[in-house]
Image (tube, rainbow, N blue to C red; front, side, top):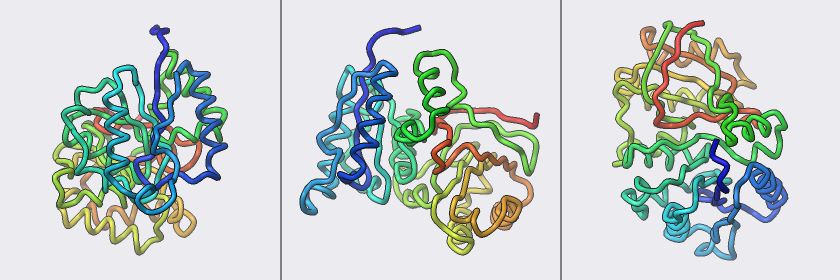
Length: 284
């Protein structure tokens, strides 16, 4: 077990974090300190005054590059979400990111950034919202055990097959709305022989159907070797899991393997998964 002091950097690459969230961020930082981290806040963490301070993408990109350049940083935890992570992509130095020892963590809108990092560097990042540790005691304990090298269950969500009986490949995707921001850009992942992970916070049937249609029109379901479905929070208030599966099959077809999990998505008790990691799952 590596007992050396670790360093993490708390950052926001998507929408600026507003002051009312400071107590949650401070609680999260205390948990990370308990896990053995030296915690540093990025200078661009909280919202500034005016559009230039809060939304200017170069400023947020520079903060991220500073974090990746830090030789002592082992992890970069993004605590933001929203809409803006794709705006920083043209300003990133992916060669530096590739050589950095730091691992990036984020979820939701950070799906765009995480997949872009994988496409341009081959480097995996964790799809996980680290402030969840302040809300869920069980996940907090899971995270502490993982960081201490005692148990990795927090990064191993369980899946149940609803079509097919096995799949193997590198995981791409994340939030369905945010992965589609990369369509037609140099950051769009090669979906061939990949497992496509999809989840959502917002979106009722019509919106999710439109996203699935776009993925189908991009040829994704013909090339991917499996679909992993996480939680779809707003949609699940309208339809049950079986109806969601039927909706997915309308666009993905009846041949591609599909597995579902309630442990990936926007719930505070969600687990993490590494985008870019190769996994193999089958019916148990």
